[in-house]
Image (cartoon, rainbow over all chains, first blue to last red; front, side, top):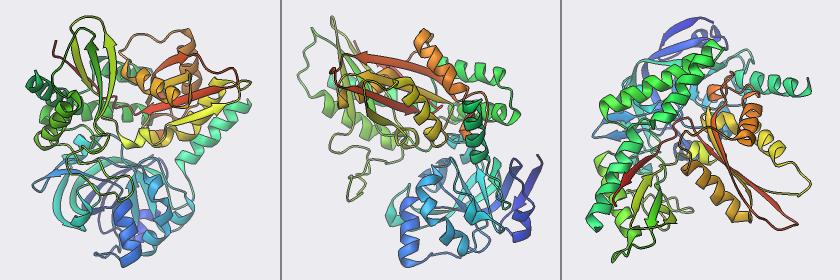
Length: 177
Length: 270
């Protein structure tokens, strides 16, 4: 388990060296998107380039351009969009609860930020801008500047290792013991 | 009196969103001390740090400030000459601006956001009648991550309700921000079981689990799901079961998931 301090935009080399269980702190621009932003990007295309992007499954609480609380939302709801997002160049998806590992193989990682820790996350983020504001506060595509955003755990790496799946498998083996 | 209800609603929501009950913090601390997996322990400590930051900044500890759910205990001798539901709704609107809260309440189909966390049926007010002249209001903001994992099963009376619960917690826990608090309703009817499960969460106050609850809690923690589903000894921190008689042909079982941020605050008006 090693610790990495990375900066966006992320390169393929940046993410290929990450291994499941590693700890990551991320600085630079990150984008928030959840249910509605994903659906809209599928229909109409992305308002921003996602090349080398870190995409954060998050519906922040903000006020007057300040981030007040901004922890991760459940990634499973956005699982249907993973391939499209990675296809547009996203190198890291950040969230909680995990995503199927297959689409990440050889090109990207899934990073787990501790769920429910919105106040801690807010201290590491600053609003740079917002797109798709008509979708409302939680569903807009926020542009954040992250400073040492973390700790995040590499929960799905680019080598098909999936920590959530490993926990599920060990659960089943315990049951049959 | 109406003003007092509005103000108590704002105060209860403010406290519920920015702090955690002491008994909840104690259970997280105890779990961190017991936890054998370093990654899991770090998660638990980061959660405690997050609660400290929220308290310092007086900000919601989670960006999912939840759906406004309230538990009201009202004395049978009390007569109110105003609508309690409207007074609480007014408090929710004020709190949404003041704390502030993320506007979460939307129309179920158009998904149009009311902007103030109220709407048809929202806030949800769960009433309990008690003796005397009493009026207590508890804010129990409920996040979607854990609520989305909740379920009702209409079991065959020959099924084991605890096997059903363990199986579903195993499948669903990772998405519900574990370590969890679990409200369980066994018996009654379809909707009664769900209300009992919510009620079990509302009535959790840190008292020790009884033997049946503890056995189920131990089975769930033996699953090894751990904080945030990334493995560990701590999958659930509390569990409470409520029961009611049911039809001889039925066995309803409801599981209401609650995340580690088991937010609740009570204001005593009378």
